[in-house]
Length: 488
Image (tube, rainbow, N blue to C red; front, top):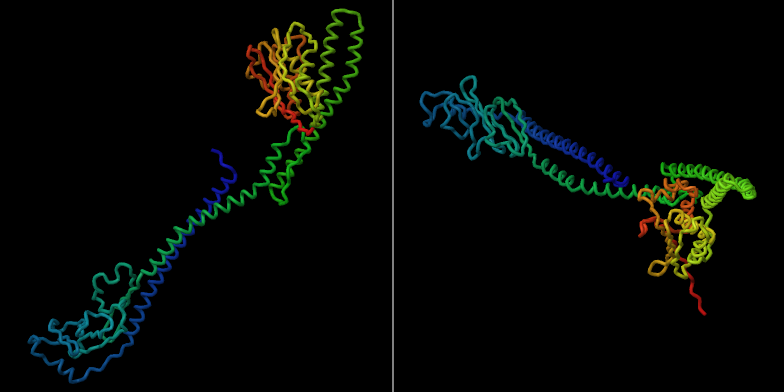
């Protein structure tokens, strides 16, 4: 399947834009995801840093001496013989053994969650415990604990990113962990993906429509040039293609085509002038030679020479007529009764007197054109049929069409006919079939070419088909002349 330039340009532009948009979408999504994740990591690190800075500057509260002594004496709930028991101020922990360290839960506070007072008990140098109370700003996304303490199952998993740091406090090293949600980042990426999924096809449709429109506008001058070139024939080489106002490649093409038509017109004009001049210059010596041969003493040589001179004279006349037809001059617009002309020209004496010419002429078949040209067309068709007929030639003239707006001329013979592969070639100039070349009285090879030129000049068409009796049937169709009705 052959695609037009407009369609190929539209498809190419759409594919290029689609590839560019796909690459841009992948790059944009990748960069945005990395940037959003980096922002979430920075936010988690910032939260951890803020919490760590507050822990680092938290004051060490003074422990009252009475409390220290009370803490040093064993209580009834403690195990005998233990020393260095870890306790939380105001909240003893019977589960702790003497000498243990670690966070002690405040009453009513789970674990070491933010917003609660976290008390870490550490054994002093003299065996008496010392306490540090560390407080943080309430934040559910920050976890504080000892380095060996876990943040809890699932904390920071899923749509979160975490950051941790270890800070030295008065009670020892403490791990601060913070998390930042990835939900906003994923939501932003989902919105971007929806925009790309629906926006890219719409943009591609817009690109295809605009490319189709603008390429079509750019090809309008090309279509005008093509249409004008299709109408230019050998008879109107003076016509030129339109040159667009824009100074682009199409305008350069139009100027080049016009320059080529100029050269072609000059070459064809020189050829026509040469043919016309040569044929005109040959007429006088040929006429003189024919006169001398006709006045010469009778003899076989003189008869053969006179026959050749007649053919040469006919050839010169045909060349002159073809040169005039090639000049493209419009024929005279006369009303010609085609049936009357056909009857007059068909009944003229022919060299082969034994061939019978039959007429089937419909009256009032009027065409508009040149009577001498139409008469020459009929003469050439009848002469060609008589030359190849076996016994008879039929000439038919009739009107055709529902409104009688056409005229048809048929010339049939009962000869050997014309092969299918040669039916177009017989209208070329200087074309003579092998059988015709064997005849001494054969034509010059220009008769049917003149017929075609005359028919085309009058706006018609000519073709050859097989006759009913096996011979050839030449059919010429011409537009009929419509008479304007007059009021009496």
